[in-house]
Amino acid sequence: GENVEQHPSTLSVQEGDSAVIKCTYSDSASNYFPWYKQELGKRPQLIIDIRSNVGEKKDQRIAVTLNKTAKHFSLHITETQPEDSAVYFCAASKNNQGGKLIFGQGTELSVKP
Amino acid sequence: EPEVTQTPSHQVTQMGQEVILRCVPISNHLYFYWYRQILGQKVEFLVSFYNNEISEKSEIFDDQFSVERPDGSNFTLKIRSTKLEDSAMYFCARTTGGTEAFFGQGTRLTVV
Image (cartoon, rainbow over all chains, first blue to last red; front, side, top):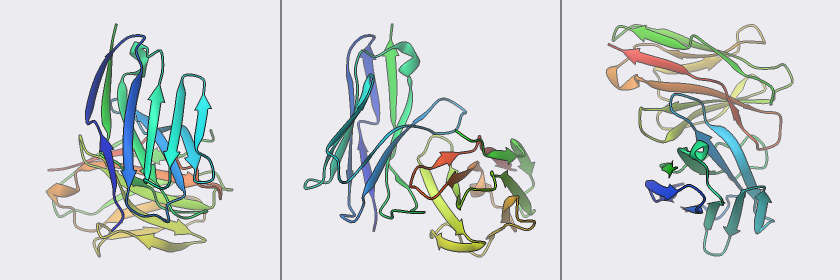
């Protein structure tokens, strides 16, 4: 069935360092890949997304890359700050409209000042 | 982003009781979803709802669950006979036709 694997489950970095979180998906029909940031007790918030017709997308300090052949996508955060500390979830969807999101297990990122 | 409002923020219920969770989306939202997140775990899809009908549901969404949009505005998730394992955060989400999904603030359901 549809599945999204996410690694690592926890990640600790020093402020200013980069952080990379990786996901793989099983359904080759998936065509939309969002990333969500969830702070403790809060809702998931969309931070960046990428569609299957694009290989890379960047928004200030965050970027996402997609390798459709390998069915991998990754989140890159540069110049990390303590406020980046949260749980990050990747997800995949295979419909252009109204498609359900299949989430990865989450990565707890801790940025130490 | 336009807000999706969920009520209540926290619901405590006795095992076996029925609960109704509510979501108030903005009227131009096309797709509505319910997701669940057990504490410390990933977000899981429950059901999607389009044009006043269920468009897809997961294995979790069994006969104990139902959704409806009774007054054309509120979007509700009903759990008929709650079990301890139903304790979780329940998120309503919406899209406007694209694939970007935005989540409400969630309802924490505690079954005791």
